[in-house]
Image (cartoon, rainbow, N blue to C red; front, side, top):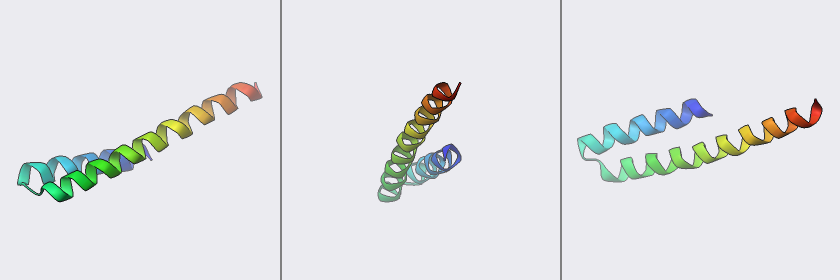
Length: 53
């Protein structure tokens, strides 16, 4: 999941440099959503792992 976030951030940066504002904004938005999903899943796995022990 984090790999996808990094991919979309790179796409957003390249699109922003080349002047494609719409694509850059969409890619940045997708990257932001994926990052927050990653953080939530990471925290849930930490909590679940802590409860098991």
